[in-house]
Image (cartoon, rainbow, N blue to C red; front, side):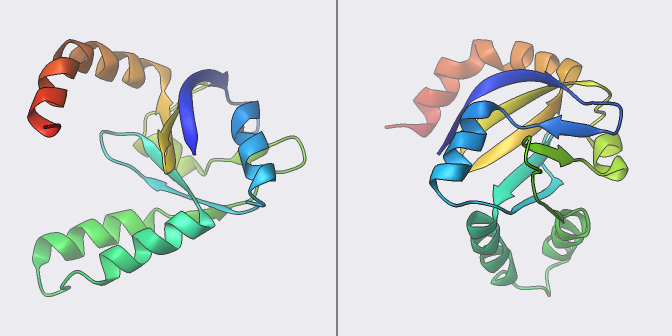
Length: 144
């Protein structure tokens, strides 16, 4: 559903304008509400409400008696909050999430099919430079 890479800036109030393609997809699919949380690799994950409920069910089904699962769930869900874009497609990113992802003003928004990732521009550049050369090796290991 969400694809592509877009560079944007936060405004003075810490709001992010979602890419126009993502706003159009949301409108066409009657998506009004999203959930944002701590992602992996120091980025933020944004899910549609429907996808968030699927994620929630998946993690709820894991045994809470395992320490690693409890730790993950605490960090993942304690960082989550609901976001509803305004009429201009802006969303407010909470300060604690910006700090987690080391987001200042410049961001890269990445569509990863069922979610959107928000990266600090420097963090995305570092990640991309470290992993782009391994793209074919990763594909070879994962896809048969």
